[in-house]
Length: 94
Figure: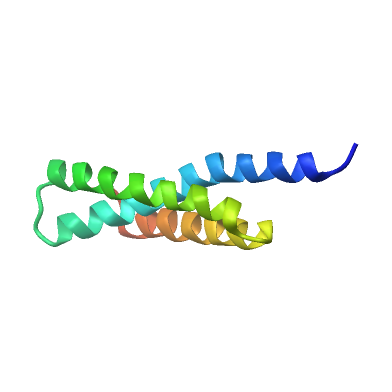
């Protein structure tokens, strides 16, 4: 058995799981910025979901297009830390 199937499974797990967590972290930033620009919260969440759906698709495609797996894993980790760090720094909305 070769290790190529492990690489494919790792890419699938990173694309699905890492893409989900990275896009949810970015959605927090999108929604915060849209509310800060004066949009109502419900409209900001709706627009944020639409934008994040496109971002999630791009992240899924990028994981399989990238030559090395660690670059996409590092980018996902950076997005997750920035998104959730930003929300914990700013705090949740009241």
